[in-house]
Image 1 (cartoon, rainbow, N blue to C red):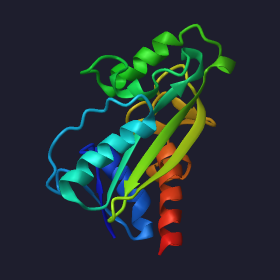
Image 2 (cartoon, rainbow, N blue to C red):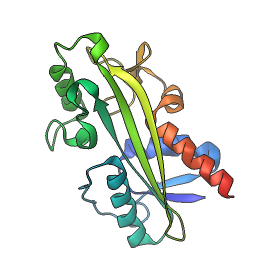
Image 3 (tube, rainbow, N blue to C red):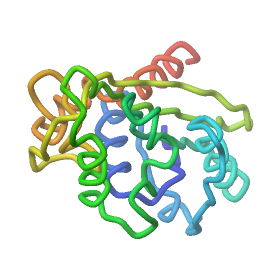
Image 4 (cartoon, rainbow, N blue to C red):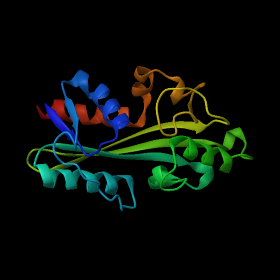
Length: 194
């Protein structure tokens, strides 16, 4: 089965393809499918943003589409950056800029108050246009410095056990990540449907 990812983010595409390949699914970017445009994510929740992206691509291509919206929720920051995870340090900030901003904001926060989670909301629109939603999360905490060379986004500062996500292999991360958890629910749905 082939599904269009409502994104052109190479990291997201690679991660989704790795997780869904064992389930016999091929994932291609919206650009490669002929929908080369940006979608304004103006929802107030991860679910709304995932739905907005999926609908925009589905309406253009009329093919099965999967979209995700995900982000980091830090308890000591009142849930920020949340849906603004990508824009948290400014519109043109790098992944490193965003991570350093979080570390700066948590500079005097003790270890036991640095709890955080990644949330991923997936919207899948099937061939008939019906929407299905799947939510995954990954509980952890924010470290005190960047560690690791793998992953992307906030992975170098997000700790799960004694490692950051950026210190894990792709396989290790995909087994516990918010996106991996949401995609496993999605693949379970597809198995039960077929």
